Amino acid sequence: GAVFYYDYQDFQGFETVVDDIFGVVTGLGNLGDAEHFGADLEALWSPPSIEGLTLQAAATWLDTDIVESEFVETSALIDFVAGDPGDPIVISPTEGRPRGFAAEFSYVLGGQYERRINDTLTAAATLTWSWRSEFEDNSIFAFDGGLFAVDSYGLLTGSVSLASRSGWDVSVIGQNLTDEIYVTSATSDDLLSYGQIPVRPRSWQEQVRKAF
Image (cartoon, rainbow, N blue to C red):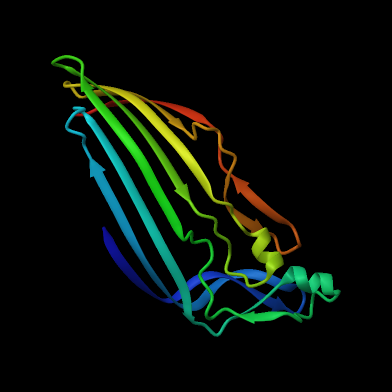
């Protein structure tokens, strides 16, 4: 296991600012200073009664804080609903809030079984389940935070392979085996349109490698 701490100076992120012509717009900028504190824990176990089997478990906890920032946030959605998009009637300081798009918890569970078929061939199979908790942007506004939120999701990945002593390796890899419908990010065009970016469904990959 490990405990880690990161101190970010002038970290970059998306900021909402007020433009005299376009009203509330989003751009990339330096938002201030932030601190990350977290812990990793990993375990491996090879049961002595089952030769070739390896089990793995790993977990991460992450806490993020914006410790110093002069930036204040505005909400294009709330200002539009209020009837005056050019006048940011709702503002909120960024300092003291967590950083956006950072999951607090994640874990991985996996196993691999390897078996020698003969003097030249070895077969292997792996299965991995990974999960991460929900996260959103660092908006304090319920409207914006909800629209930018990304739900928690878990993914199952597996593979089977056949390797030879001559350096050849043939494998079939399955991604998102449960065909989970999930997104990894959400965005806005500053014109009150909000969208989530989905990731590909169940997929298969064939792989052939040769070591020289």
